[in-house]
Picture 1: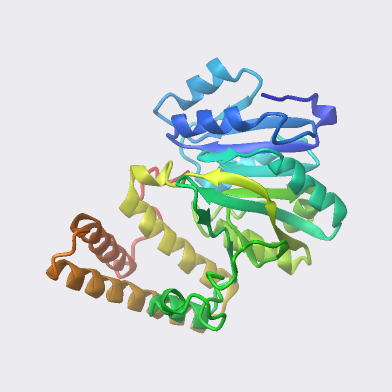
Picture 2: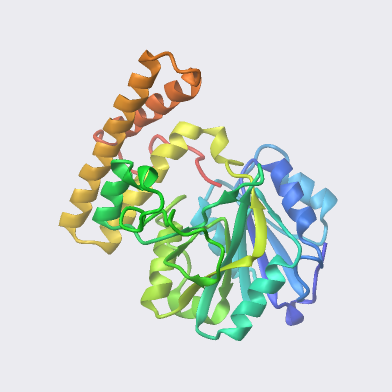
Length: 328
């Protein structure tokens, strides 16, 4: 564990955690001088965990600054709390279920130092099974959302025309500007943050990454993907506690993004496309169940979550009324 005097801090690492003690332990253990040669401080913001996460940090990582929230503030607001406590020239926001690999943060900082117009950078992200996670996306449009609803981006994975959102046509093996960097790992220049502003706290969880990245570009700060920097993201550290509720929250966040950044007509069209996608998923997975697929349990769950999401979308409920404690 590395800690520097606050006056010398270059990188402030901020980790928001909710009931992910084992992942959080591994994340903190990975934050050594091997991953960042610059003076670093580490701030953990605990969203009222009940699994002993806060106690673990206090006992095993006394040099880490621990902020314990009295209740679950959500991902964006909790990160903003951590940012308010930080002093580094760069802010490194990482999920609790991330393991940082050798030289990762060092390389991200060096890329920013070489490119003064870059406001945010992100590493190549590897899944827990060793495969690559796609951590870059294009901004959502009605066309690429329709391609997603009709699964055209899966059927024609190498065709740029159909993969504008997922970027499946690109191997993510080269340094290049991108529209959206996954919120599991960001390195942000404080100078850019001062112009763009904090994360939008109206996004409880999910959607804040699209929104923040959109605002960085709006303020003419470039976002850069750096594959030479690498981290492992296990995924689902908190969402596995309530998978259906998190799936609904993801849809809610997407709708919120469209209402914020697009016209009422465009947001309405996106709502219809989302309904189409969910209906098609219910039909497809139900048909697979009738054929006696060996993945019966998985498909049953996918039918269940799609139906639950459709029910929520047409219920008129306010955000979070059926989503208690759904945050990272």
